[in-house]
Amino acid sequence: MIEHTYIEFLGLELADPLTFISDIMMATVCAFLGHRLFHDFKSKYAKLSAYFFLFLGVSAFLGGTSHLLDLYLGKTPHLVAWTLQGVSILFFQLASLKLIQSSKIKFFLRALIFAFFGIFVAQIYSVQHFDVVKVNSIVGLIGFVSCIHIYKYFESRDKTYLKIPLAILLFAGPAMIHSFGLNFNKWMDQNVISHLLLLPCYYLLYTTIVQIAILKKKTQPIRQPVPLKEK
Image (cartoon, rainbow, N blue to C red; front, side, top):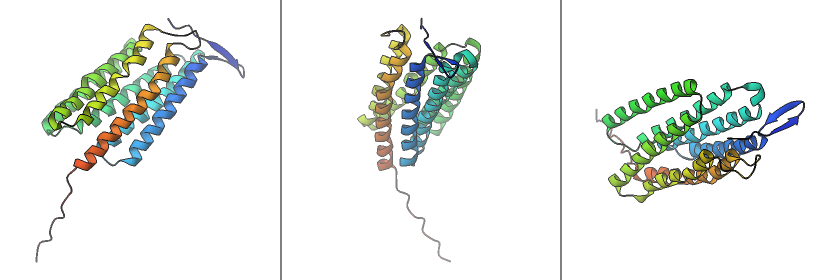
């Protein structure tokens, strides 16, 4: 059980200030990584992965603000932040689909992704608990994104694709800390600790996405100019 902390500032009673600061740190890092991915690469894989980081950053910012002003804003901003986190997972799943060649398989998996996302949103606003976000993240990142990259490894035999599942596996550490409520004290609680540990995990995931984006750029076939027909 999280023991909330409060400070008074400009007549406002602010909740969990360190959680807010750690959320802002996550938002800043995610926004920077998403910006770099979006502008440094032209592939749809990189662009969609950039949206993963960008929406994750917006979710972190909104979530931190919701914590800070919890006494005034209530539950609704938390639900919106959790929904945006689900949107970020959705974009990473769509990015992974770009690794699959078969159009039929991609169509089926895309339909499955959006169906599960619809269920996720419905559960967010009915259950209204962070456990829904955890389940969605596990299914999306491990059950879908990791599996597709592992499949791509067996198809191409390039070990670069295995780095994504390994990077995602590192997210288990912060997740366990949050789930088991491990903390130093009421100020440095599981939220703060897990947020700080997520920062290097995000950067490592970014570097692996960059490696795959470079790999795709190298292996992408060069379009040959179409010869003009003689009149």
